[in-house]
Length: 170
Image (cartoon, rainbow, N blue to C red; front, side, top):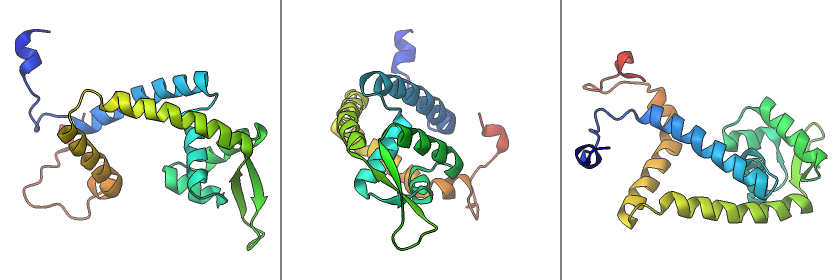
C-alpha cells in the first residue's frame, strides 16, 4: 500500500457501513468461535446463552431468543445440545406448567467463567489500536445500532434530504 493511500481517510459518504459491519461480524465471530471452541469447548452462541442465564436464570427460550436476537427454532436446537452436555437444564415453570424455563447448571457456570476470560481478551485486542476518545465513539456507535437498528433499517418516515437510493447498497 502506498504512503498516500495509507494517509487517506475514507469519505463518510463513501463508507459502506452495512457491508463492512456484515463482513467484520462474520470474520470476528468465526475467529472467536474457533478460539472459544478450542480453549473452552463452547461456541460463541452457547457462551451467549450462558451469559444471558447468568444475568437472569430460569428464562423461557423465547426470552433468551429475544435477548440474543436469535430465532426461537434455532435456539431450541442449541439449547438441546447444551442440555445433552449438562450445561443447562429445562425445568417446568412453577407458575405456568405450559412454560419450560432454561436454568444454568454447575458445568455451564464453570465454562462461563472460563469463557468470560476469553471475552476480556477479545475486548482488549479489539480496542487496543484506539485511543480513549475513539473508544468512546465506538461505544456510542455500537449502542446506537443496538438501540435503533429497526428504525435505521425500517424507517417509518424518511426525513427530507435523506438519500435512500437502493443503488447505494453494496
